[in-house]
Amino acid sequence: MGESKVKILSNDEDRVEFVNHLLDDIRALEYMLENKLYESGIQRIGIEQEFCLVNKEFCPSTKALEILEDLNDKSFTTELALYNLELNSDPLTLKGKCFSNLEKTILQKMEKARKAAKKNDSDIVMTGILPTVTYAEINEDFMTPFERYRVLGQIIRNARGPDFELHLLGVDELNMKHDCIMIEACNTSFQVHLQIEPEDFVDQYNWASAIAGPVLSVVTNSPLMLGKELWSETRLALFRQSIDLRKTTRMPRNRQPRVSFGNEWIKNSVADIYKDDISRYTLLMTSDLEEWSYEEVKKGNIPDLTALRIHNGTIYKWNRPCFGVTNGKPHLRIENRYIPSGPSIKDEVANAVFWIGLMRAMPDKYRNIWEVMDFKQARANFIKAARFGLETEFEIFNNILPARRLILENMLPLAAEGLEKAGVYQEDIKHYLGVIEKRVINNQTGSQWTVKNYRELKKDLSKDEALKMLTMRMVEMGEKNIPVSEWKNLDFEDKNRISNTFERVDQIMSTDLLVVKENDIVELVIKIMEWRKIRRMPVEGLKGELIGLLTRSRIEKLIKDDESIKQKLVKEIMIKNVIVAEPNDDLDESIKRMKRFKVGCLPVVQRNELIGIITETDVINVLKKKGNIDEYLS
Image (cartoon, rainbow, N blue to C red):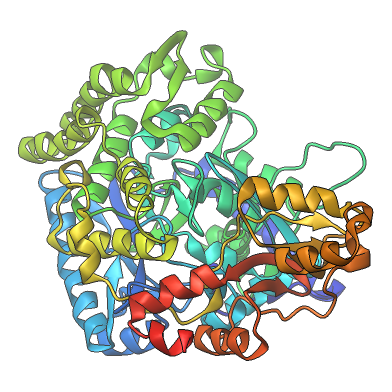
C-alpha cells in the first residue's frame, strides 16, 4: 500500500492499461539485471517501526491524526487504525556503528512521538498485538479516514462477501465472524530492509526462508488476541486470515493466500518471484500510470516500476522482494515482515542485528539450497516457530535441534561471523547479540513474559484488568528501553495503578457460555444448572440465534404446579421476550436496565447471535470496584 493515490481495478479499460504497464515493468526489471544497472558494492539497512497508541486507561487511543499533526515530521505516517502509527527510518550503510546509531535514531524519534502522544492524553506501546484491543475497536469507526484504506477494505469485501470467519487455535480458541478489514489493524511489526547484491539475490532470498523459523522463534511478541491465548506469534495467523481473499470451494485447490511464506525455492532471478506473483494473484489496484518503464530505461533513465510496486504491495510475503531507487540508482532488497513490534527498541534492533548477521553469514554450501533442503521443511519450521516460539524443535539441514540449542550453539556464532564480515563495530555485535543470548538463557521472549504474567494475573483479576496491567507494564518498560529478558513479573500490588473504568458491556461479559437448544428437555437443563451451580441459561435456536432464556426460579415455579414439566421441551416453557444487550452498549445504562426490568442477567447479542452474557454477580463485582454498590442494592 505504498502508493497513496490508488483505486480499485473496476473496469476493463483500467485493467488492460495496468496489465500493459505491469508487463512493461517486468521487461525493464530484466533489462536492468542483464545490463548490470543495479547498485552494487554497498549494503544498506532500513526499518519501519509500527506502534500502538493507548489512552490513560491503556486502551486504544484514537488520536493518531492529532498526534501526527503535532509531530510535524515526515518520517512518521498513518496506519490502518486510528490507534496505530508508523516511523520510517532513513537507510544506513551496513558497517561500523550503524546499529547503535539506528537505536539512537529510533529512540529520539519515538521520544518525540511519546511527547506528542502525552500532549493528546495518550502514550505509545510497542507490541505485536495490543492486549487491550477489543471487539469495539475493530470496526470502521476506528479506521484512518484515508482513501487507500477504504479501497483495500472494499476490495476484500468484494472478494469474500460482507462477512468472513476468523479461526485461530492455540492454547485457547478464537472463532468469530467479522465484516471489516480492521481486524488486520491489530497487527504491528518491526519491518527490516536489507539491500542485496543483484547477483546474490536468488541465494540470499532462499537463505532468508531457510533461517526464518529459527529467527522467529526467539523474537515472538504476540501471544494474545481479544484476551485469548493463541500462538506464540499470533500475528502471522491473524494477518494471513484477515486479508485472505480466497473463497472455499467444494474441491481442494492449491491457491496461495496473499499473506504467504512462499511456495518453492527460486532458482533463476528475482524476476521469477514477480512473474509468479502476477501469475498467481488477482490484480486489485491501479493508480495514475504515465511512465513506460522499458522505454525510459532504454533511454538511460531509471524508472519507478510503479505498476509492479503497486501489485507487489498487495502481496504480503513474510520475506518480500522490493525494488527501490536511491540517489538515482536502482537497488534490490529483502523486507523481513515477520518480526513483531517491541517489546523495547533495544529488543527490536537486536532482532534486526541477529537476522542481518545471519543473512551476511550464509555459508557457500547453502547456495543452490534446493539441493540440501526441502522448501516445505523451511515452511514447516516457520509455522512451528510461530506456534511454539522458543519451545520449537527444528528439523534443519539434516539435524533435529531444539530452538535454544540451535540459536546458542549455531546461529549466534554464525551471525557474529556475518556481522564481522560486514565491518560492523565489534562492541555493537557483542551488545546486540548479547540481548538475544540473554533472552534465550533466561527463557523469556516477549510472548513468554506476557503469557506467564497473564495467567498469574487472571487468578485474581478480571480479563479486562489483567490486560490493562500487561499493557501498563509494556508502556513503562518500553519507555525505559529495557530488554524483555530483564523484565520482572508483575506484582498484584500494581493493580492499584490501573483504573477500574468499565464503560461497555463487552468489558465485563463472559464468553464462556453454557447454552441449551430449543429441543432439549427441561430435565437436562435442571441437571446442568445443578452440576454447574448456575441459575440462568440462554436458549439457542437451530441456527445458533438467541430465542429465549430459562431461569432456575421459573423452572422451580412451574414444577411446583406440574411435575411433568421436567419432560417438556425447553421451547415450551422458556422466556421468549428476552431483555438483551449489545457488546458496545453503555454498561451503566445496561445495569439500570437490569434493575428496571428486575432481571438477573443480560444475554449479549450481535445481529441476534449470542456472543456473551453478563450476570448479576458480574454487576455486583464491577460496582464494588466502582464503590457504588449500595445504589444498586437499594
